[in-house]
Length: 169
Image (cartoon, helix red, strand yellow):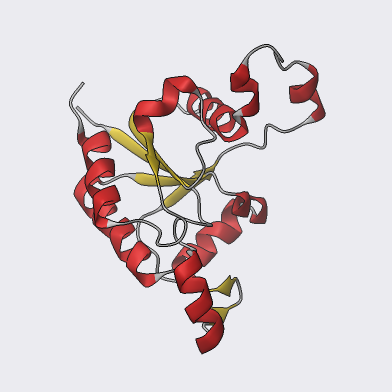
């Protein structure tokens, strides 16, 4: 059976870490997209991709650059994996007009965007959400891996993510 695995990836606090950002500023490690990403976090993402074969959907605010520019950045920076999509921007007037204010899931904007992406893209059998903020729906908690924004993706996060994406269900 062909399993389609997706990593919903935030960038700031996940690949773009506080620890690395300070060093990158000192060493002036910049390109057309800004300061480079933390090489340790990027290496750990590569480990996840290698062990799971997952594709990447950008759930970060960086998605406003657009899919083609995100894919170009991925290629230019030689980042691991393949960016196959961006979560939609659900914070529209229409979304707010129809939000159920009695339901706390209303506040989980990123979780709503991930849910919408999954509804629009069939065939996903496993997914993981890598983020430094727990802005998800209750139904997504078992897919969420919290990333420390100071250090980004750690080896412990790699183990958690691989288990989430490779679980048999």
